[in-house]
Image 1 (cartoon, rainbow, N blue to C red):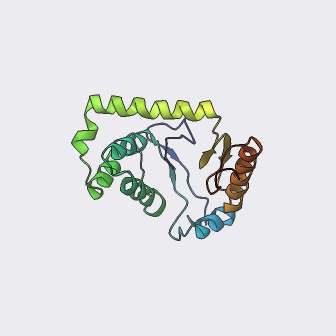
Image 2 (tube, helix red, strand yellow; image 1 turned 90 degrees about the vertical axis):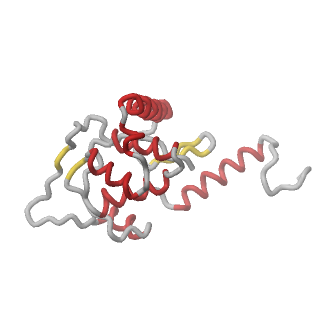
Image 3 (cartoon, one colour; image 1 turned 45 degrees about the horizontal axis):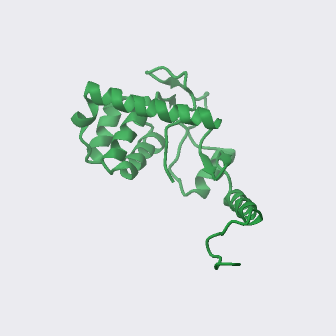
Length: 180
């Protein structure tokens, strides 16, 4: 699996979009979101008071991947946003994540590097548009696109369909002996 950039709200300004809670409303998840978070083991996940401008954190993710530290950066970024309610579009928040992940802020934040990572993110966003991706998570399985938080059974059905298609075309499948 390879994580790539995607903007849920491409119109978000650099300062983010405030999402104030209604009087008496908490940041606790409810309904489908609560069920999905619980099922995934995300017990500290909360609704956030801001929609962040994510380009800087996506660019930092490209850098973290180049440095072989993507998984740690990704987890720390999700924790900062979903559990600590931090604005992951704020360069100071990203800098703090870099410190936790032992990433070199100076190596990332130079103007020439920023332009390079910005272009790499733009290329990933263009790829998502080309594939018709409209939400996250999104998975491309062979020639099929699965969008949204789907139950495991959906993936099993898609994979079974792909195997059936390949078998009908006479293609060899993993696990089959020669000539089966």
